[in-house]
Amino acid sequence: MKKSQLNLLFTLTIVLLILVSIISLGIGKFSLSLPDVWTIITGGEISAIKRNVFFTLRLPRILMALIAGLGFGMSGSVYQIIFKNPLASPEIIGVASGANLGAAMAIVLGGYNVLLTAASSFSMSLLVVLLVLFLVKITGNVATSTYILSGIVLKSISESIIMIFKFFADPEQELAAIEFWSMGSFGFVTLQKLFVILPVFLIGYTGLILLRRQIMLLGLNEDEGRTLGLRLKPVRFMILLFSTLIVATTISVTGLVLFISLVAPHIARFTLRRTGFSTCLYASLIGALILIAADGFARSIYSTEIPISILTTFVGVPVLIYFMCKRKRGRI
Amino acid sequence: MSKQLSINNLSSGYGRKNILKNANLVFEAGEFCALLGLNASGKTTLLKTICGLLKPAQGSCLYGDEDFLARNEKERARIVSYIPQRHSPMYGVSVLDVVMMGFNASLGFFMSPSPRDKEKADQMLNRFGLLAYRNTDFSSLSEGQKQMVILARTLLQNTPIMLLDEPDSALDFNNRHSMLEKVQSLIREENKIGLIAIHDPNFALAYCDRLILLLNGHITFDLKVANTSIEELTSCLAAIYGDISITQWKNQYIMMRNL
Image 1: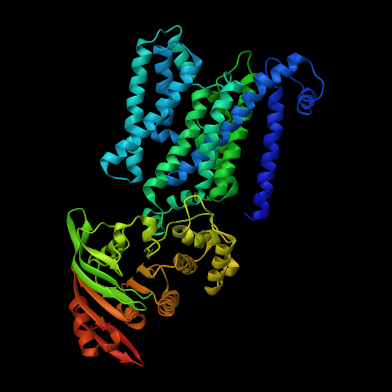
Image 2: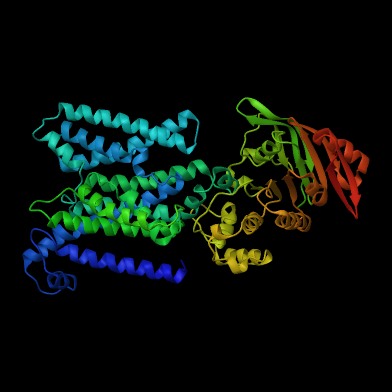
């Protein structure tokens, strides 16, 4: 794909993203028509209730979906590059399991306090990732497979502890809350929460963009990268830290959002037919596009809101299958 | 500039087993040396230890009086570069981006190559006749072109010591000659220390100034091609390759197996 084609594709995708966002801003129990949305965006006169719905409900939600999609798409493709594995995603080093454990813990031990749940899931997610890295360190083997194995170990431990919490949870409320959290939703996003997580997200996201050359070097054979002056350990640590910040902040607010970090990079690669850093950026846009669309459906296809993970899977899978069938040779 | 690379009592290997045993060598700038030996004789182990991919069990490597093995990967990559037997597959990465990876050791973590670096990269591609391919997908090039791109990348890394581990193993007869010709002239022109592991002794005899023969992890002979008589060459190489003869044709030596 030529550079001009690439620029065109990026522009078209961004335009599509803006269109889908504007449509999605109107969708919901209290629906705003497209002219309403336009009036609010351009600062025209409109009823207070519509303005209120727009600024306190819809806008934070769409922005959150945007951030989450950008983050999942980016970190998913970075993981696939640095672990040289098309099935890698931030899951494999335990980010999601840690967040899930933190949430379950807060729900059962701390009553169902939304802020406490977010804080607890964020810190447990960081803790689990750090434990994975610590486990890698004490094995003294920095091969990729050690990271994956350590991830599996801590993921399993987290999951059994979650089971303990579930077992002792009150089935009416706590158990339901744990289950509901693990299905994900953008329904609890507020402007305040958004302001809290935005800086952390930006640190992680900018960090990954700045480290793009190192990410590509980590994608080479280890020996080749190191003799080109890649400082394997500190660079890998920084990349894992930045992507964990992105994913952990997001899911601490939204609950688990499955599948995006896996499917977006594949769609990006199949579309661009290349694997450079531009693919990571494109995967980021695709992630945002799918999440904003999925969240729109979550608010509109049933009388109550549907958990987001159900929709990301239903939206993502057909697209992925389409590209799998379209792909001629199994190269990328 | 021209410092020596000295290898002192170096032993190294995988796990507890030492493959390379007590190597002592000194290399001068402008010298292109071949490491010859059969499989598992320790050629790759020696190269990997010098470039810091393997930790030596004992001994040291000094460039001038600097112990570069004690440095981190990045500082080391400013002194030693390495061309592996096989480069990583890179799909959808442009040739220009591949050669610019060579600047990594001289850039900060978060920095990108400057426009001047880009210009240098273009000049390097031009020197290899690859400028027309600068925006081409690396994976679509032929093996010969790919290896030239990797060589161009290594030259941008601009290190005084260049290590090459059978860089010719995937190349055909013509590409093999043109690659070795390039490396030889570069090492002489830019006064670098070049060390190449190679399987075919005829190519070593044709392009290298010095032959280091390895047998079971020991350095058995260390010969300057120009100062060695044909008889001596024959007897030394026979110690490794068995029943062979060397003849002289024009000003080249040619080794053959006696059938």
